[in-house]
Image 1: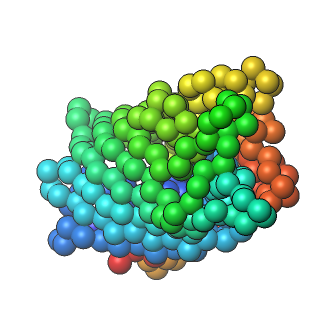
Image 2: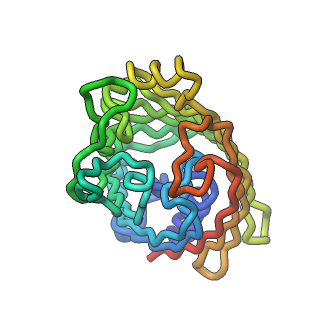
Length: 275
């Protein structure tokens, strides 16, 4: 029974959250599960993390019958170097990081009829050692390291979920960005007896702080809205996904290595397996 529930969680992850696959509300016979997947483009909140290149991803989760869960999840990334957020001295890049490793914990449960809630903490870790580049918007300062902490809360009713994530400090190289937040609404609907699940998603990433304010004043706001439509198919334990994502992101998300706007409309294929 849990395998089926876990697959449903992976289906939701493939459709709307290319990051962590959160614990489900039914405890497994073993509290530990794992997942591994391939994706043609790692897109997070509408923005490619791999310059539209493939990624290998996977994680391990712990789920307790009380509703408590914790886990780790990882993927290769390239956006930090590609966005020129790493300092270059004498033509030599000062370090690098090509690995994202997220750690998270939380509590998920149900109440009333058909309602769920989920609260937790997640840290986005970017492994490697590097020197941040200068902050072009504030003379004499540098960008922050990419490591980011968020707390989140979600409320679900049947197949609709609303979620709010709140940044606790520096946010993905943007310094002094406490209060940066992401509000999203997701609907997922399984088509009975077909193994297919369809989903629609909309979210708004809002940046806070001096750097974000200066970028906005210059007509290059980092705040944007993203949209996603997707479908998955359960193939005897393997989840095959197809999703189209687009945003209204400004040129803030355009870097040379990306070959254009990182938030432009893109289609990604994914294949995920739970163990």
